[in-house]
Image 1: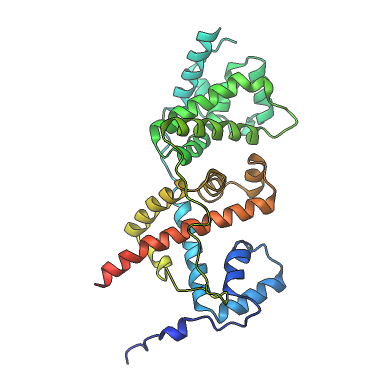
Image 2 (image 1 turned 45 degrees about the vertical axis):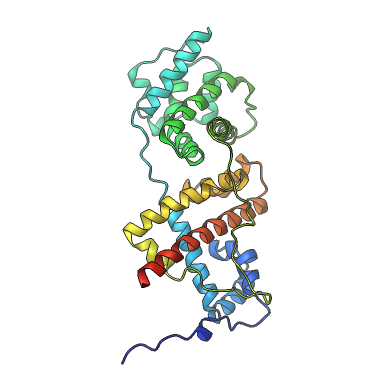
Length: 97
Length: 217
């Protein structure tokens, strides 16, 4: 049996209106993702997420963005940079004195 | 102060007996060339990486790193020893890099409000705009492409946001260190970082959509 095709209506938010997607994304997502949120508030957002595929997808893409940014870090540092910098400072300060 | 140093003094420092930043500062103030070499060894990679984040060019980042240490050496007498050295020094590095960036090209940035997620009037998300994000970052080729675009999108952010996201998410510096370096409160730091992340995420979603449409056709 082929997998049931998801209809657009099923991809919409069905969460209770006390927590909107906007509040979750714009105001609460940082602390939710970082785990720096009071438990009661976290539970409230978890309830929203359980009924809101767009917010689940948004959280997923927010985390994917973070992963992408961390991948920028391993950049080759020029192996002779420390010596070059030292010689540069030495030359400039030699001229000054 | 005369600087004359042996090859040994710019080699890797012995961590087990590593002096504190403040020890090195005091010795540099007193004219100790070995201390300067140790300071360069300790911080050159971080200064280079921070500079690269602003300048996005290896040659400029290298020159900015040189200028940063020259400024350190010349201005070390103005450093207030009751403050943390790294935050003072990172500000020196940021200022050097931005000064070079201004000479090289006009600052082109977009408003932080320009690329944010869109919501309907009832506060719900308007659409799923990047449903395959986690799949994309697991694929080596698309992850490389996304990283290149992300770097570009960080570059278009206003400075206040660019510094925060580069230091937090690329350099992975602790929040308290970043807040202190940039003289921000922790809530202001969190707010800026979140806005910057939303911007980069939104831009990545925008460029990922055409790719998906092409793949589907």
